[in-house]
Amino acid sequence: MALTLGVDIGGTKIAAALVKNGEIIKKVERAYHREQIIEDLATAIYELDPAREVERVGIACAGLINSEQGVITFAGNLDFENFPLRDLLSPQINREISLTNDASAAGWGEFRYGAGRSFSHMALLAVGTGIGGALILNRSLLLGAHGLAAELGHLHVPGATEKCPCGLIGCVEAVASGRAMERRARESGFASTQELADAARAGEKKATALFDEMGWAIGAIAGRLTNVVDLQVVVIGGGFGATFDLWEPGADRGLHENIVVAHLRTVPEFKRAQLGNDAGVIGVADFAYGKV
Image 1 (cartoon, helix red, strand yellow):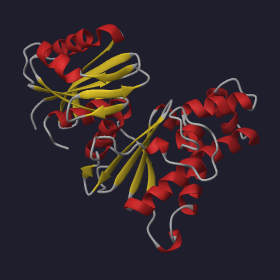
Image 2 (tube, rainbow, N blue to C red):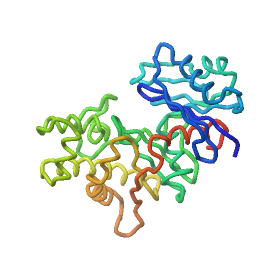
Image 3 (cartoon, helix red, strand yellow):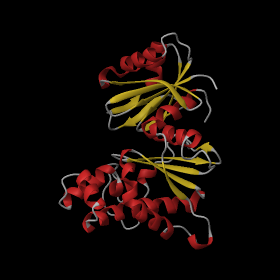
């Protein structure tokens, strides 16, 4: 495979990498300013590839992305709305650009080169500040009619009543994301999620119960999703996925309690993501050359 270039726009910094066959050859990270993001992206790309060896660039960004038009339809954390990134950046770098959602990019990276590479039907749940998702079905990334598929963080948890920042009630993001667990930790007398995790690892019942509830919520939506698309594996990524050992038992229980005839079928397994923070740049590099 030819050398490819992937860029992941995070909340405060840009990560960009030259990639070949899923391996990062060279990587740069730099802070950016929202008001000059086009210039900051161009600088990072030229720093990686000053000789312009790579003709196409894949870019991943959180939020609702119109991949066909190369527009960030909405990215609340970045305060972008109908932002024509491709049309603004392409003349600056003289390269073709593919734009997609960051969770879709990370999911594709894990499927092609990480924890999902042995499977044909996979979901990624990126558990961070929020919860992002990606679906791989029959070895193809599900994007949907408008590129907005797999908003898995907004699936409803049975019995949940918390209001999500999106406006819906009972989303798994409102119950089991890093932001939600930070709130629940404080409500239970813990100073932070780190203190909550430390207490859970020490066996404190109040802390273990909170992680058990978190796991059950994620397992429940994984189970109900499996009822629809018959998954083989659910890959857990994101920064808060590092606590998976604390909520894995709850997730397994929630999964089995929400799958139709779980005792008569093969249920999906949970696996930790393998590519870490590089999943997005590795995955989106494939997008640039239409390998999805």
